[in-house]
Image (cartoon, rainbow, N blue to C red; front, side, top):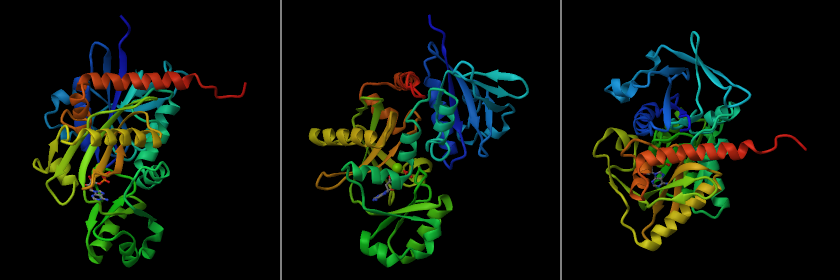
Length: 365
Ligand SMILES: Nc1ncnc2c1ncn2[C@@H]1O[C@H](COP(=O)(O)OP(=O)(O)O)[C@@H](O)[C@H]1O
Ligand SMILES: [Mg+2]
């Protein structure tokens, strides 16, 4: 039998979605097919330091949400090698650790945005999810929307501003262009952090300040009235779409509280009750979005369906929530791919892409 692959599971991280990452990683580690894979648990603390955790971290710590990874003694240093086999992680003082493939279970900045992908690429390691370009284009809401528009994929009208332009943002101008209410969002984040729905000038000013707390660029969007639909995409060259699911927020919008803190924050309709033609349109749009944003591996495409059944793409999440009850794995489960098999498939896709790209010439003949 082939040697088991060592799967580095990266979790925690510097983003505001640190805790969500712990929950996702716990589910992935417990579902990993232990006949094929050996997990290596790598916890990243809020300051960005890497720690080598014991394999049973998630079994021994009862309250996953509040694990303080900073308390894990072993700090890791990265040692890039010429080949994947030579790459090592050095745990102080003298232990070295090896991974054959990495599953970055890191949501948001420094994990989902291409920076970690760049590091893993430099280390010549296969990794799950989109590569540098796909991750970065999916993360920056302005770049994402521009690429989608370019590919004739409908998105909400929007304006983007940088922090140094803050004093020139005019409520009246924005209101005239985009109407009311408006959504104000940090350009690079997730989990609804820093997002406001605003209806008047006071809320507008507050929303601008709030979004700039998290990013030096923000986007302002027109309000879309419609059902919120999510569709999971999986694959490299020939990505496939799952059946769509519906999120019914029990709040003004699908806020951080509704997502993670309030048990009754949202209801889910999995699969979404939609007619066949609409399902097909959603799946085609999701795959088109995935490709337009240069994604491979995985991505969850979130859309709005307006009253007249037209589709608007809201965003892609290239490392979507991955707990057992999260939408991405749930959608695959009802489409015929159970959680454990999905994790294995993602690792295979990572290996396939790495092998494909390793064959590319890097110098002139
Ligand atoms: N233009 C919009 N119109 C209506 N609702 C929106 C709009 N943009 C965002 N929302 C609501 O806010 C939530 C979070 O916004 P989203 O762009 O998905 O940010 P995040 O990346 O943080 O998830 C969405 O799930 C939706 O409920
Ligand atoms: Mg979202």
